[in-house]
Length: 115
Image (tube, rainbow, N blue to C red; front, side, top):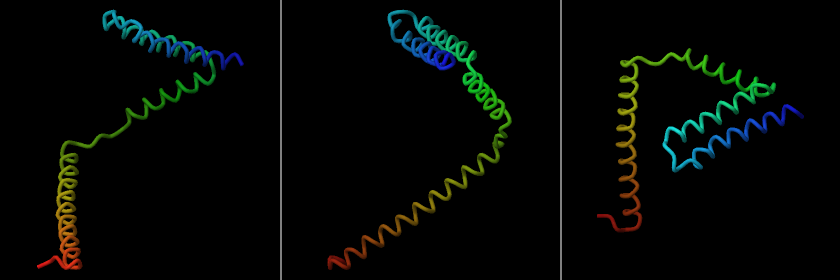
């Protein structure tokens, strides 16, 4: 039960930090951002004391580590892929335009309005 109270308090601190951004609207932007950051830091600090909080923070750390292992395409690969997409889009646009014109002609012919 105490862990659920810790998580609820953590959520409340986060909400208060975000609310501080709007409550201090007459203050400088730095103060407003510091209010949000203080809420986030306090929320993480309280959540860290609960097992579920430690598990969630561990998940975030693993996600960051996994994101660092991502292999990004080179400039040449990006350009080639982009060119392939553009060519495919142009081909599909031409195909769909021909289908549209064909259907329009057939409908006019069926309705007796064609040449």
